[in-house]
Amino acid sequence: MCEIDQNRKPLIHCITNPIAMNQSANAVLAVGGRPMMAEHPFEVAEITETAGALLLNLGNISDSRMEAMKVSIKVANTKGIPVVLDVVGIACSKMRLRFVYELLKEHAVTVIKGNYSEIQALYDSNYRASGVDCADDVGLGEMCACLKSISAKYKAIIVATGKTDVVATDAAVEMVSGGCKQLSEVTGTGCMLGAIIATFLSFKDRYKNEFKMVIKACDYFKQCGKAANMPSCPGSFMVRLLDELGSNTELI
Image (cartoon, rainbow, N blue to C red; front, top):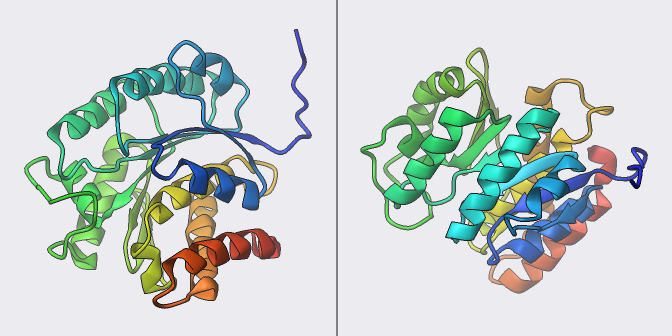
């Protein structure tokens, strides 16, 4: 049996959507991880066993990815591997919301991430939104009021993303401001942040406090977004965002 080299960059196993798979993989590489996007249910257990962190992203969900997520999270929990659950679309899809409730009932996660609308849907199952974008009817005040409750219920760090990201446990809430409008105007940036959070969580020797690690990841992404800002140039912005993620690693 091949022995795993623990000195290599951490492997980040991402079961994510094909819409943002390339951006997410490049984001992991930019901040010092090694991405692998394995999603076949027959192989994901073996892949997860060697990972430094596991990302589960519900975007463009399918039966196969759902099954793979169930297998991978079970392995991650057994091995003590950090898990980031990005609850994409649960505010507009009851099927996705039921699946998240099922995962959280049976398994532990380190971080639950979603935009304001998705986190509101996790808190209040009757809340509905249109599409995967954050609706205008959920504000910062509503987020602060429910995040501690969600964290206490699921024993997880909660990340609610928006113009201001809110990172919370049942005992503390931190605001992360900055970034730029363009982060919400191109596809895949939210998925990239989930991948970056997972990568940061794999740096156990660098950051001992998971809550601070997640805050650092959100802050770093917003700083890079601000530096990359190119209004009316979405394609160039995405390239510049990856450039910034890879060239400012002294801030990590």
